[in-house]
Length: 175
Image (tube, rainbow, N blue to C red; front, side, top):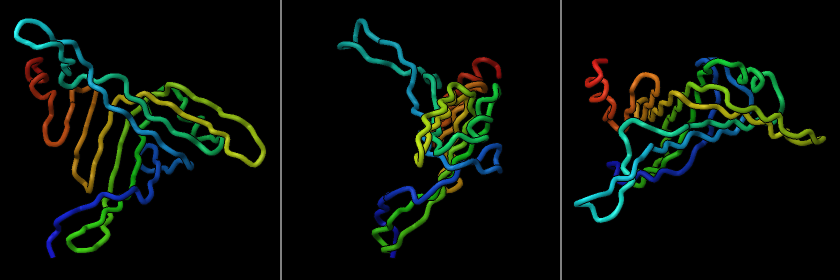
């Protein structure tokens, strides 16, 4: 039976790695929001105002790791340097055409600079709520081995769904 209707269900589980191989402690992760920088376009021939996005220009992007405990991993992320983090996950999808449950690999890579470290609270028999907040300068999202998003703020790359919107800018700048 052919695949006719994929129902995207949930994230089965994920792991957090640093530098591509060393597994970090247990953390909940809030991934980056991608918000385009805009300017207001208005004037003759336009019926009002349009917040026009600037190709390849995004606002600040953050990733936040919420830890269960104070530990050496969250302390190390406060080092004043870029940290390469990788979030590997497995999505569960349901194929309504075949009746099968399909597992799909998802991966988000970020290069991030430390922005804030919150040590959390100390209470007996409870999590500390320790947080690491980091500024994302590079982000890549891969689904089943296919690059779907790549934003590299330092190298003029802004790739979304098959198009690098900064390629014409690099060309115009002679890069």
